[in-house]
Length: 101
Image 1: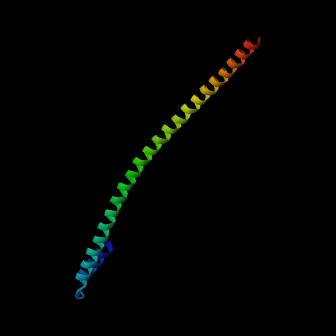
Image 2: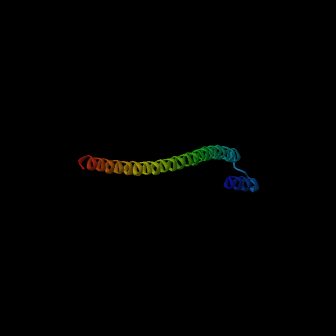
């Protein structure tokens, strides 16, 4: 935009402006404005996508924490069950000894 404005200012300062030069500059300015608007739309879209990604990352982090908690609870349950099975086997052994004795 600055280049186009500088060219426009230079052409106005010249004593003999070339025919059609101002309309060409105006067309270039309109074209650049359209490109700029397109880039701005793209930037807004990317901002929305970035925001959605951040929200999804938070959801994933929460799910990871939930999974870690469940894994911890499963390990605790496994330990309790293993202890209960060991104690049951020991009781069965003692019952067998009592019957034999």
